[in-house]
Image (tube, rainbow, N blue to C red):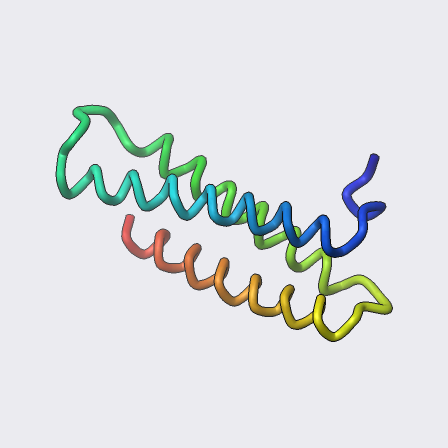
Length: 95
């Protein structure tokens, strides 16, 4: 089943899950680079986190591009885009 066949509410929930997972993974990689809890390379973990942030951002954009959205869903998608874009920018600039 295609992603566009699901209702916008389901797509926004998946966008939130991808986004929050990406933020957590990037934050763990950033925290480990300063505290040195694990002596392991954090590049792959940070890369996966950034990829998940991009997927979440693209899903939120997919929702906002749909026609006939309720104002509530449209507002949620706009907030999700802003939050994920700021998170993505923050974690890219901390590299």
